[in-house]
Structures are given as structure tokens and as C-alpha cells.
Length: 155
Image 1 (cartoon, rainbow, N blue to C red):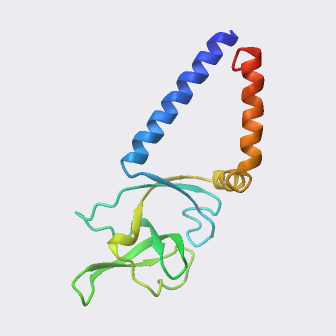
Image 2: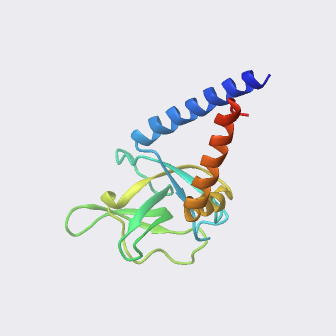
């Protein structure tokens, strides 16, 4: 029974890793939502999955993840308008669902990291904790790995 569980765990882990690598190389990204500007659509503490931007169609009313030079951070907001800037380039006006007014700065397509695909509520708190405590989590993981190796089974 332990052997079957160990093999199943290894297969599931390997498939998860392969899928993660495939989607990551295809441009899909994972980000943690750190503010409530998109509530109630996307809750603070959620992990958001974004897919690559394709400008072949309009993205008005879609949610995008973009890098703000003003805030030096990634921001998840909804596109409210598309327009052509004075220099002839396409720009987006964005707004958080919970915000009253649109953002003051327009977003250029090269600043867009991706288009919202889906989110997993509250798991971002765990991801943020692991990231901040990476050293301790790594030590704990290696201790557990050593225990498993010593017992010659995964569980």
C-alpha cells in the first residue's frame, strides 16, 4: 500500500511539474494579489494565473496584469478603454474594480505581463509566507526528504 501511494505521489508530482513548465514556457504566469483594488472579482491574497497578451482583438473589460513604473510593482486591473496615443501606439486605460476612478497613467502593451485567466482565493497568503520564509521552508523540506530517504520510502 505504501509503495502504491509513493508511486502515485511521484507520478502526480512529475505531471504537475511538467504541466507547470509547459505553461510557464508558453507565457502563463502566477502572481499574488497584494491589494483589494480588484475586489470582489479577485480577493486580496489570491494567486492569479495570467495567459499571454494577444492584441489581435480588443481587451476592453478584460483584466490584465501589468508592470507599473510609477509603483515599481505589478498591478492587476481591468481595461476600461483602448486608444491610440499621440505617438501612434496603442495604450490602455485601466481601473481596479473597487476603485472609484481610472488609473492616471496609461498602460503600453509592452508593460502587460498577461491577461487574467483564473485565480485561486487566499492561497497567495501561503505563497507569500513561503517566499518570505524560504530558508526555513527549504530546511524543513530537506529534513523531511532525509527522513524519507532513510526510511527508503516517500511516506
